[in-house]
Image (tube, rainbow, N blue to C red):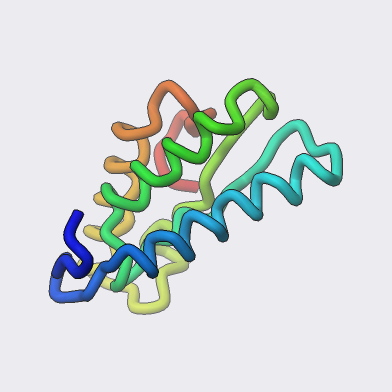
Length: 116
């Protein structure tokens, strides 16, 4: 990855990625420090974060914490609670869920019905 890549019209750079990785690792560490055996994580999806790239970062972090949690899930909003609603919200919710379930399939507890 170059120092600045344009992803969906947004600047994604190494500094931003490093900060996001820090947030991800911090969430996992706090849960462990409080002796949680399961965790529901923020997907960090939105207009700035490309879901496939973020899901791959999560995969890296989850592999670092391999075996330390019984269950790992993500909170991915569906179209009913998305701030913008409408067709675009449904499209993004479905894309986000699909991307996360594909990239992290073997690392997560997936709900039976898709988004929750």
